[in-house]
Every structure is written in structure tokens, then in C-alpha cells.
Image 1: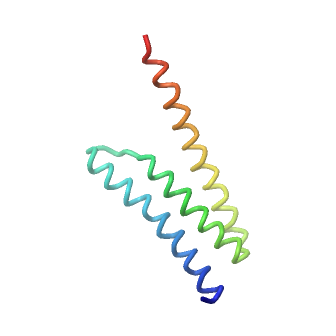
Image 2 (image 1 turned 180 degrees about the vertical axis):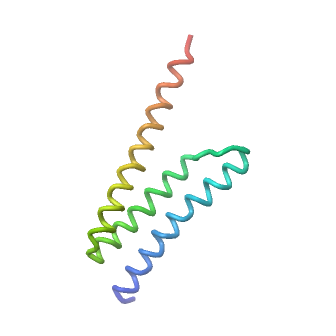
Image 3 (image 1 turned 60 degrees about the vertical axis):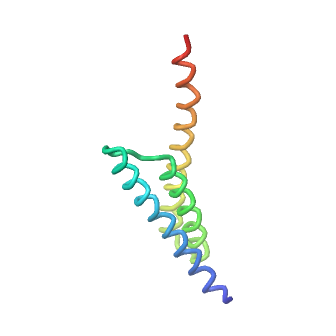
Length: 95
């Protein structure tokens, strides 16, 4: 397999992962009958962002690199906040 073909696959794979987060969020919200962002949304965001960031680095596209780097930070921060909230919540409900 040629290097360019491999990198196109990585780019398209990243875009697919990134797009899956919207499908997951939509289906979960439909199930809950309200707008909800499930944790899977953030994991798909991270996976897609990492793949797209890799592709952007390969392409040496500074605009794309900056955008994906910032997004990756936001997605990781959201997971950190969710994890921290879950650790605090059981303590708050204890007698």
C-alpha cells in the first residue's frame, strides 16, 4: 500500500469517527426524549481528532493542526470534568 493511500485512509477514518459522535448523540437523545451528550460522544471526538490531527501533521497544514489540537484539548477536558463529577457525586449522596 502506498503511503499516500494509507494517509487518506487515516484521514477518512478520522472523519468517520468524528461524524459518528453526532450519530451517537442523536440516537441517544432520541432514546432519552431530550438532548443529551453521552460519554461515547467524547470518545468518538477524541478518536476522530487524533486521527485527523495525525493526517493534518502529515499534510503539514497549520490551520488544520491548530484546530484539531484545540478540539482535542476540549474533548479531553470534558472527560476529565465528567470523571471528576462522578467521583464527587457518590460522596455527596452518602449520609
